[in-house]
Image: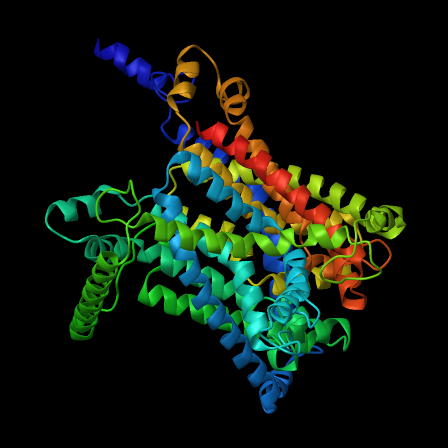
Length: 606
């Protein structure tokens, strides 16, 4: 027996270990290689088209020939003009964040507690506004707030004013337009947290004697604060990088810092100074994230709870003050609920009709401007006028007969299809890795995946343009596909992560116990079941590319542009009713995509 054991130790088995035992290192090595292969396409894409171009742009701001120079930064702070523009940017972003979060909270709350059918309807309207082109929505506000626009015409008709008001080209117009653009983002960010709050907790508080208002403010609202904080961060960072709405609705006093970057690149051709302004913008974003992490914790961005770093006596005083404020708000809310009338059929102390009315008004605020394009596009008159004069399809005929518009549509469709396919091929393995990989650094990898959403789009666009100019891809459709994939991949990853978390992995295990290998299980079990989710993520990536303007503004080339770039060129030169016809077509097209994507997503989660 002892001799046999010695012989077995001398004779390695088929797995290279004494006695035929499999080495524990080899399965770990194979698993590591498999996990690395899943992340490699995304890492390579981001390294080439995100990290390197942005890094080159920032490095260029401190380079002077072969040496190091801070001349561009001295120029940046030598004049108060640029500091004033930064302060204006922060002010506009701050007001936009405040109003967006306040308006989004009741919408997200109602969606989180609504029945399935009502929830699906509300989510559709929010997603429709979220994916409708910023250009379409901003152009609609130009028509709404113009001197001959809908608002002024209505006020004149009612006799409330004698002469048209100057509602455009001021701070109010910019904030209204930006709140309208970013409120859906706030709703969707809050909703991801609110849907995970146990709805039985306020009910349990009520059974212990708490009034409805007190139960909401003392129980539900504190649990929803991570979502509120995350939505405020996302809206603020996105608003800092805006340029479409301020350029069309604002005046000189509302110039944003991204508009300075565009001027330096497109007109002054001063790449170094554009890089310095980009560094300033990126520094502001990083400071905002640092403060957010210190106060709340970046874990809230991935659905976790905050860590509450404000300890000590100051932290205790702050918590006591916050608790007292919530108690006052709860008492005031309870008084209002007793005063407000209750509709017949409503049980308990709730006044659900008030919440539904408020949310209905906010949904109209989100949806009405885009619907305004439909009657304007059918106007039988010679220009953009309200109310429309007769009904005619002349502007649609002019739109479809224009080779410039048709070429732009065709190019955007092909680029969108390429972006959707490439984003799905790169993003789906990354989603599998994040959900099933079991990695310790999941939060870091997810933060890397979300980097294109966090970094201001203008910085990405300028960096990619500089990189493409060096390798000859400016004006190339292939270049636009890769650049659009960078900003579309995060949406694919998030969509597929939601689908995979609801996927029953026991189906894969059953297939493997019946003899199916990993590839066969993926091909015959996993992917057929996840097909609806895959198609949904493809459509979201396609919609992201189809509506992308910032990158196309620099890299699409002058001869053959994308549809958003052609739209931008048209409205900055001439407010033609053709733009209303294009807006209507875009709105209907995006509505169809969202409807199909949502149906597929719900089917995959069923």
